[in-house]
Length: 601
Image (cartoon, rainbow, N blue to C red; front, side, top):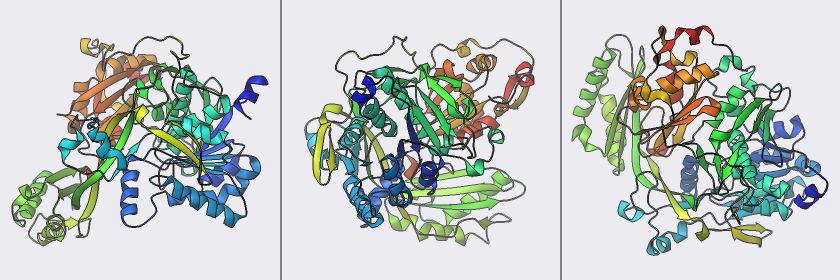
């Protein structure tokens, strides 16, 4: 149904948008499960992440395709059925080569005996424009550190702007059955179909913001249906968790659900957890709109159904995010297991013996990081990075092995001695949005060329809402909490958490289930307290953001992941377990809150 038709015949029915991939490597049967499991209108899949773009860049350098090949594996299972049922397919699996991916889809369709209209969206690739942009005065400064790209002395291998939902909407309007994109925001996979179905423009700020929230919720697949959930014991049949659906309405509100008969659970808790995943403050910036996450309202709408409403939108930022990557050097790691007593002393002995076997010792490497985690067995992980491949290759791993009979008692390695591997680095930057032009191509012909995102023509249609406070503002934490009987127990007894990465930074969102619990958490869990509970955070800049509407706090820890995932030296390089580490920390929780804790709705 065209947008105009929907408005002539009354309120349009909800647009049922299904997700079948949360990352490159997700369950390959998911597309078939979503198509066969119940009625849907649009099948989407998110294949891209910052690390994925680096991996695809390495694939192109090695002569392999620069797009996600598992997308074709899924598509082969469902393409004829989708065409029969009028299901549109929208995916960012095009990666670095959306045209090549679209050509592969067309060839697949030929083999399947069907003839879909296949469109691809490009315009995001700025790799060839970097020198001209720098010459024109655009510094492409690192958004985290402020360092201009020219001062870094590096040559980017890839540079891609994050496009919005508008090009996707234009592709669907042009009659595309399958839309393949390069780098778009994750939420654009939902925003674009919403713009197409409901006729939203850049002025429909609240509707666009609601779609951004819905897109953020389903982009990571089963994470919103109970996957990676703190209270996993409350989730039935997680081994067969269903992928999510967003029933998107014309006003931007949505119901998050899943097909009946599938495992997992959609609850206010699972939705809250995903809302807090990889975010910063209350303003969630997207190319098409700025969504106010401090306005999101969640309501139980029945079994495995959560209504998301009330989202306010503000005009989008003037700039688009650009993800650049460049060659960082070489890396290698060895992991030793330490059993029994005196783990710290044994780890110190192991290091002394290893560095003695390497000319120049620990200081011979650009980066030499040592991490000791756990107990009985404890794991000692030694990671080295350097531009010199030979130095971090067998010369390093062989030196570790040479100490095997002259080290701590019980010495054994969990990794075999290996050679070095190349790694890339991620460089986030910003560029004025009007410098990026998107294009929709069908059958080798451009059918639309225009802005990379929806542009508001006026002040935009949004309900008034107060300004978001600065990080940490508004909470009673600075004033302390009233004395009362407490017990020293794990924080996770009453709080859930979810954490993730953004370049070299990490976030951890913490939420509770009641207003009394949030009043306590808001006062107790300050930036300083967070560093006390998780010592690895100490010394890093921490921003605290309040989300009273979600009974949640979100913390952004700058630099915890070093120079990013590909160059990360932590055992948990993407900070996926940071939230659970926090939940395991002992906190002084009021006895009254422990006594009244109950399962999530």
